[in-house]
Length: 115
Image (cartoon, rainbow, N blue to C red; front, side):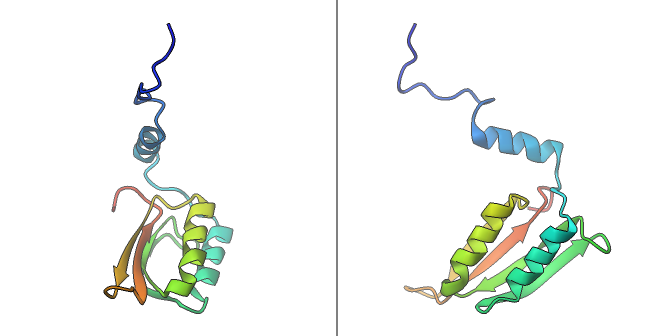
């Protein structure tokens, strides 16, 4: 019997289900020294301000979450960092400024538990 074009993927094959299952099995994605150094280099860029952050673990944090304030011209750089690293469970973007945002607040974290 041929599959219907409108058939939905089973829950165990959906990407979102796999991500949720992974996050529950492994609530923290470990950061290594290079990940942390790349993050520090990111927040030192023009147009990016580290507003707040909290870590757990010394000298290299196991858990890292916080908030960045990002100007629009630096938004692509920040987004690429979070997507390419594949170490961040979440990054939430909130625009500041109506009608044309002049900056974004970006909350981020490498853990599932605190989001």
